[in-house]
Amino acid sequence: MKKEAGSRKLEAGSRKLEAGSRKPEAGSRKPDAGGERLQKILSAAGVASRRLSEELIAQGRVSVNGKTVTELGTKADPSVDEIKVDGRRIKTEQKRRYILLNKPRGYITTRSDPQGRPTVMDLMKGVREYVYPVGRLDYDSEGLLILTNDGDLAARLTHPRHEVDKVYEARVKGVPDEHALDRLARGVTIDGRRTAPAKVRASEPFAKGSGEQTIVEMSIHEGRQRQVRQMFDAVGHPVVRLKRVRIGPIEDPDIPPGHWRELTPQEVAKLQRAGSRTVKR
Image (cartoon, rainbow, N blue to C red; front, top):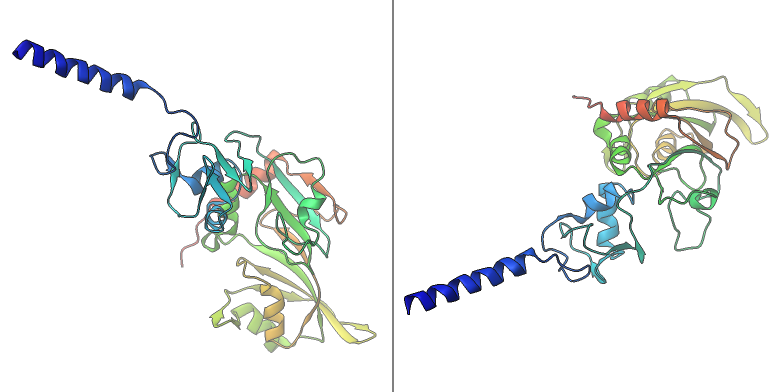
């Protein structure tokens, strides 16, 4: 009887080992059955930065094995699970792309727009990889914009603690005096929060039909929505035209509006160094 009981235990144990050795088929696992966090997988696949990936998940645009996932912290295994964003299966390995675009006015800085307005992706002819814009540049503004599928670099370039400068040329109404320029440099209050210190330099004013105007160069490292325009509104000199001319160490005045080029390996290395710097205050 003891031998018979022992043989049954061995047989049961062998069945468990056999079951454990089988790999789950794609689509058979539940979304949270081990693996990595979804936002990390999406970032590594070049879909978006981790922060933007969290927004995609919260918006219900991500599915795992056919089931929509909205809970942050959900885990998956990209080698087994079928992970889709907007109905399109992600590729966990793809060529890294680093693109510098001279964005014209009249384009939304996003991959898609619910209102059907033109987006910067309409200018990305010939780019097959799933790239996305790094940071903001509003509809009425123009100038340099980086697009990439490197989620980690995108996150570092946009996080305030790394203080990656963005330089703008703002044509504003009127002639800002020293007091106004000093206020901009020291920070103004927008929506109850004070902006970080900025570098400001004004050129000589010039006459226009509607009155005098001035071009002011401003360098900031924050990225709040319409921040530069709101800062000039706060000192009484509304922006007429706004152009971004530099992102960290990257500038190129020779790219025509609406055109783009690949960043060189040297430029990518410079951006990576700029994004790895942490400024302590």
